[in-house]
Amino acid sequence: MLDVRFIREHPEMVQDAARKKRMDVDVQQFLDIDVKRRELLSKIENLKALRNKTSKDIPTLQGDEKQEAIARMKEVAAESKELEGPLREVEAAFEALMLQMPNIPSDDVPEGESDADNIELRTWGDIPEFDFEPRDHVELGELLDIIDIPRASKLAGARTYFLKNAGVLLEQAVLQFALYHMVNKGFTPFVVPHLVRDQAMTGTAYFPAGREQAYRMSEDELNLIGTSEVPVTSYHTDETLREDELPKYYAGLSSCYRREAGTYGKDTRGLYRVHQFQKVEQVIICRNDPEVSTREHDHILNNAEEILQALGLPYRVVLVCGGDLGGPQIKKYDIETWMPGRGAYGETHSASKFHDFQARRLNIRYREKEGGTLKFVHTLNNTVIASPRVLIPLLELRQRRDGSVAIPEVLQPFMGGMQEIAPR
Image (cartoon, rainbow, N blue to C red; front, side, top):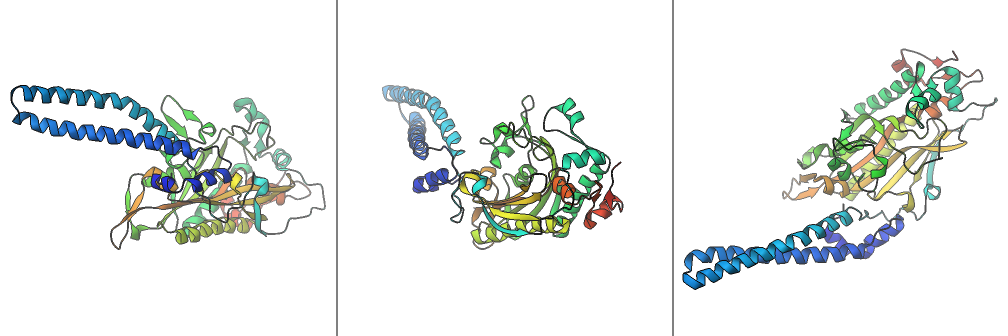
């Protein structure tokens, strides 16, 4: 979240951020609530000070004067108690509105309504031309006996799937390759809790705006994560780190769960948009310095590009426009990989920087080496790889006329030396 002092001093900037991000936020309403809250707090503090002074004076008083002081103290206590209810209401409204305040997008974030307005920055790799009629990943999955969607749908409904046979080996190979790649680059690997408390979801800004996308275990007051970003970024909640500990490079491996609310009828075929998937996510916690954050943003983007290049998958990098940028992000790059079955690029990675927006919610700080000043850290994250979505280009781009699929050389050691998946 933003510093409340920043909102008070720059309300026009915050309102313009909401406009650019196409968010329905009323900054003036928040400021009005903030004024009421501060007035009530001031009244309560003044009454508390008066009560404390009177309680100290009472032992020194005698007779009527003492009784008057006791009566006055009771009146003050009653008045203070009457203000507690209004203060609770105002504070609840303040906290709810505070969580709606958007982060300020970077100056170079373009205007736009949706992902259609994102700006292509660069491409890598050649889009292949087949000398035969290529199959999409659903057809290939059935032919190779590695994907079964109809039986999964009978058991679990739409947007579900079984992976089987070499499909399981391929997915595990992709995940293991990506994880080892990050470990070799100095990232600490994590296997994380899949169920987390509201604090972690709110702290990483997946609540309240993204609440409809989460699977919630109401009885236990826990939520299934939609990405390991949530537990990994929350790992240092309420901690104060040393400056010389930073940056922290983390990579979380987990299953992920999303309801995909609001996507009825969109991307219903195949593995593109599903309720459960596997992902390796990279998270960086660094010093509170915009230049450092910019370097680390390029860093995590480059890590993901290295993975796709090693797999030989053509892709493009786009700069995300305001209307496609979430409330907490300052700037975001998406990587979209070419998927022949869609005849288009499809998003496979999102690289986000937040500055101290998440850290303020999670209360993650560090003490500067020089001077000892406490500051909130900056946080960033990006996909390393997500499956089964990455299986779409892996299968479709590397298919042969007979339906077999060539396995990328970098994955073969993770598949026992298997070089292809052939029709069964």
